[in-house]
Length: 286
Image 1 (cartoon, rainbow, N blue to C red):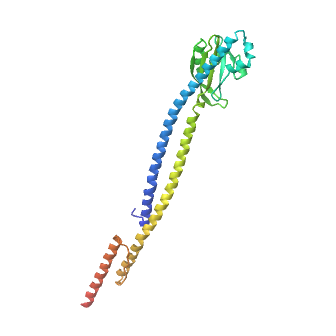
Image 2 (image 1 turned 120 degrees about the vertical axis):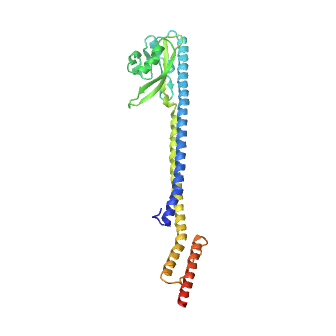
Image 3 (image 1 turned 30 degrees about the horizontal axis):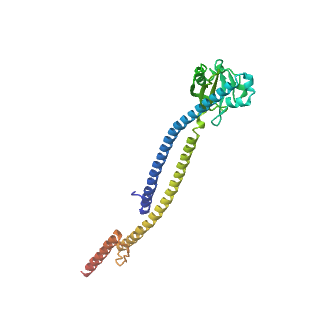
């Protein structure tokens, strides 16, 4: 700092004393918020993902039981009778989560009989084996009459690929099976919202730290300017007195009201002034 005056040096020290500590505090705080957000998001994803899986499984099993009880009570119903029965359709096609649903298919043939989309009814699900291999790996063993479940990728109309979870449950006492499926991220949305809350909180904290930093810096600068003036004013006065003494004005008045090291310097200058006076008078007396 050799090229700076007292004010410049104090200004730099004020910046160092305020900005750097606040920067460290802000960095540490944001790092802790980020780490906490990542842990909560990861654990929350796992927990809510398992909860979502269980909900889908429960809906599938409940739907299978309800369909089984209905078929047992209507043994004389044909497929056409069932399709014309709105009560049975409500049992076969039930909501799962926000956008999911259950569907009813034949186990032996793999033909879909009841679906939320009428265009998909009577579709041979074997045709999806190539297009949706993960879906088919879940469905294929189920067509043998077993309970299966798992994840598969699904492409939305906008081209986005998302994970779906599906449970396939045989309908007891019949040749049908129930498939219950929906996007698993529907159950993870609270974690996403919580993560967004953490991000907004981090942004607010960053703004708050910035405001505190600016205020602290302004206070420090004002204090530095005030302190530097208290130092430089008497020093400049002593410098002028020294200049006057150097040109022979030994009567220059030294006025310093401080009680610190500057006063010590002023007293030293005054003693020098007195000594020079005495020396000049002795020389004149010879």
